[in-house]
Length: 450
Image 1 (cartoon, rainbow, N blue to C red):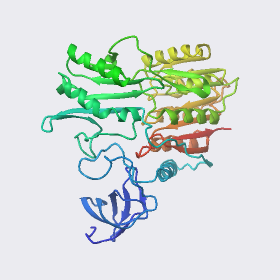
Image 2 (cartoon, rainbow, N blue to C red; image 1 turned 60 degrees about the vertical axis):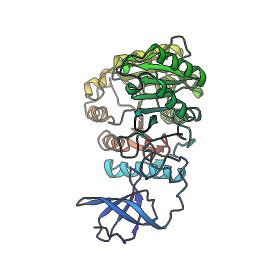
Image 3 (cartoon, helix red, strand yellow; image 1 turned 30 degrees about the vertical axis):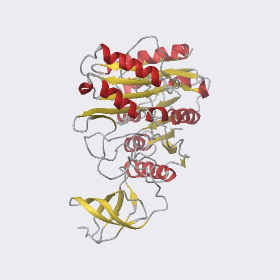
Image 4 (cartoon, rainbow, N blue to C red; image 1 turned 120 degrees about the vertical axis):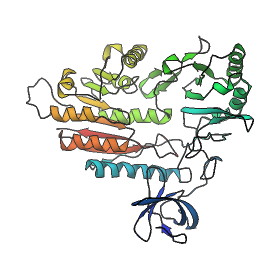
């Protein structure tokens, strides 16, 4: 048990941005707010047989990487915003922590060591977040409305007046949004506002549990004109989202390197950080190395974020997704960018793949794999099993795979399958700082088979 006056030396950070130390008994202690190299005394909040969780009480040696947080709502104090976890750590050190997390996961979970470490992809650390889901609540006791992220480890909404990770014009809009909702007739039945900022349009999706009055609709229109935002309404599930007033400009983002414009709806899945996404797509395609005669498969293709740029380089690209609706949207985007002739799309359950299904999609020279957090276990297992089947000459495995991941643990698991069962080498891997100041780790890896 950690003693009140015991000094602990912080050794590392975990994925929740907690300092990790060992007490005199050798028990692991997770310390909120502490950084590697610091010596601290702590207040223990939870005790288990194998570990303790604590908060920092006193510090006598400070990390050289500790910085003043850039947001007044960040911290460990009561009411602190829970949206960021690493603002007290220099952003360069944050990237190093994420790179080490990727390397550790690859080795400890997949027994894979990349032959080369890629330079981490990083960009602006502030005002980068183009997507966000903001909770809304009318707090009767305070006589005001709160709009923002939840408090740290709490179901309550933080009393946010600014948010330096949101686009500057959206951060400046937080207090006016509070005033807007407070003025509305249905303020008790408006639980959420979702932000989706495109290259030229900022959309706000208002979730409302009851029909809005004509007066409320007019308040939204007035706010939209004043602050230059496009209002969408969501009365029920995501499929019910619609524009408040038709005829406005289309929401989209640009992949300028490839001359691609990607239209999307505010509730579609798109990357949170447009700047980093553009850099990531460019790196992924350079690693993929698609040639004019290549046929490429883009697994988990989404709206075509990778499919369409690949189509500017390869002979043919097949995009595969889990839903017919998303596949239809991908086709529309390909057509809008003049790439329909070089692309095709199919819907398939990618979590129940078999070697036979894999082969039905035909031979591909290269793959791009961009799965959700669950990873691509069924796909990688089907590929590994297919490589063990007799060679008929009709199908061969891809010579190169670029895997884009939002979860280093599932990437490591799948990398283990590719390397140890499917005969691939892990040529390179690197971290992608898509979410500065958070513990979220995105990454990219490239595999090659002789």
